[in-house]
Length: 435
Image (cartoon, rainbow, N blue to C red):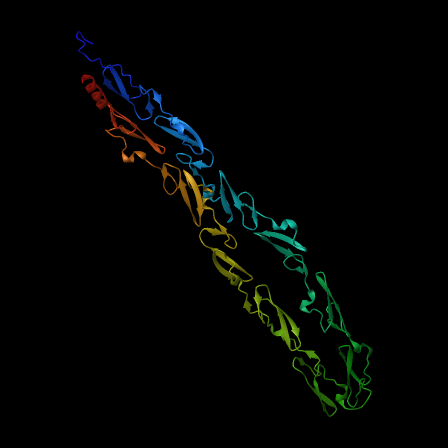
């Protein structure tokens, strides 16, 4: 332009370059140097960064000089390239094995458990395994409490009530359901054959006194008589007055008996009661025997005299703690983090939801928090201040957000971190016009 066409018209004077593009004046033309993310003669076209399909497992939203991926369920990452491990939260309970799948998982449960997360204890009592008693469900098993007269893992065994030998004097014991009956030897009657039939009731001794025996009698003849019924005047020992194998010594007109061990009395007729001295300790019951005794101990005791306290701790019943032996039982003092009769239960410290901004993983006597982005602390209670690094330049004011920040720039500056000087851009543009 100009009278002599001496003036070069500035093609940039109309600011043709859009979206912050830099205009360079040429002879009868101009060219635009576009900002990142734009193209075209006047930088009028926003480049579509989604055209290359950068999101591997999700949908793509085009941005200015970039893109944002919205991932399909089960994936994460800038390009949705990471398969989320659904097993990281340990969803399978009671030691079940977790297998990660796409946006899912499956649990291989330990014996005795079932359900999606192995949270259901299989009821082994549902099949009524206890034949003669009640069933208590256990982990991968059961315990039977048998009705009277039965025993065994499934109460399948009829207890032999004859085991304690209740029938006295060699009576034959016949076991019944929760009972027994005695077939007594000759000379005895009673529930336990405890009564000796008195054969002397018919006064069989002609010249003397009668002593009842087992299934018989013995006559103690008057001086000068002998024989089974004192019908003969003969040796006083001929009638064998000494019972239970006692040795008879004949003396003039009388005799003396040397008794076997366990018997006493003139005729060795008395079985010495070895239970009279109370030899069975700790509440045990005593059964008198010939020249001895048998103790039936109270629960929790054993030994010939029931003097030994059975140590119920010997089987190490306390799984996570120390055991104190009691009489016919034990007490567990559990380690921290465990509870239950046998310290078998791990206390879940996550049940109180201690992690304020994150997920909780239960530990033994504790927990671990996995915080969401932008939070920290033992319980994820601290909001991380992204402004602490002072990202806003040239005196810009930083405003902390959740897992982010924003800069309020001073006059003359712009950009995410106020890093661009508006004055410098204007000065550069003015110099171009002058040239």
